Image 1 (cartoon, rainbow, N blue to C red):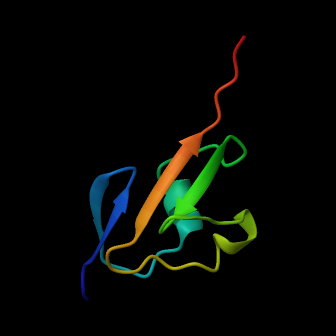
Image 2: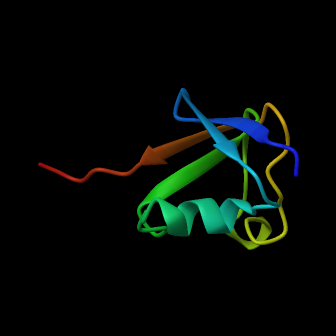
Image 3: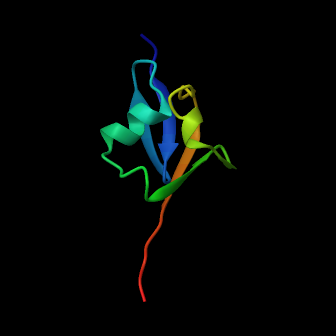
Length: 69
């Protein structure tokens, strides 16, 4: 099986199977109610995460929301 290279928050990763954005979020244990996901320079709606498969060279940025006072 072919290896796919992608970037998550500037870090390079490799996967060997078809993987969705939702599966990556679960794997890295992100709380999906506390961040915005940017996929190849576009903000991607949560309903698209399970339908979007990671492809070679994809760039994913996860911007967490931090509260404070």
